[in-house]
Image (tube, rainbow, N blue to C red):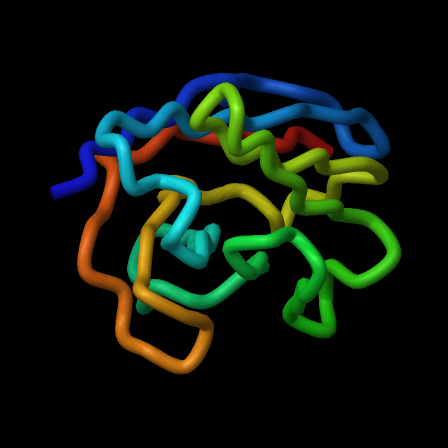
Length: 119
């Protein structure tokens, strides 16, 4: 069982930066691949970024490549999403999630944190 709690969301102007964090409970955190997803009002939830249990493999949706960076600290049971050069279209509720590996559906989800980018 893994419990996830996101933090770090807020209101930022276009071009600004935010760093999201996801704190995980459970001794097996280091065995899980972790992902970030987002859901904007009236839209479906979409994949943003993912990282393997070791941190060696990462993936991003095309629209955030070069602007967002996912990282993890297994010693601290945390995963981060550094978001730079934010755009109004990045506005959404951001969720972190855990999966047994990058090819498996995500089993555990956090409650989400709001990110609002003003133009």
